[in-house]
Image 1 (cartoon, helix red, strand yellow):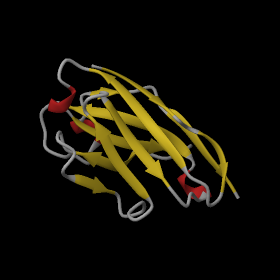
Image 2: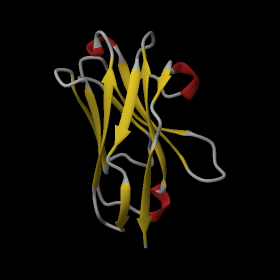
Image 3: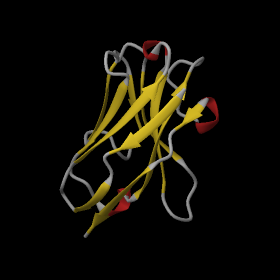
Image 4: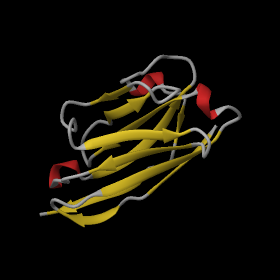
Length: 123
């Protein structure tokens, strides 16, 4: 499985961004997808995850109500819509794929990782 994240950039506080992660996977719909982020000097942290069908989602408390994860299994792509952005969400955002677990929130549970896309929110 190969993952390619895109959509990051430099935006101002209050703006929105949509991240995308395109996956090359034989059966994308069999894979749980997640988003993590890592800010400078900090550990990688869970942001959101979505079940294989897209019917179940999970969010870190810090992003609930502002971020929305979705997926299009026909396009082998998962999205992260980020609204009302604040400087504290500045980080490199990584998408990840989990072949075996149900919705997972720990990085070690994910089997494949994309290269990351930088999100910078200026105040």
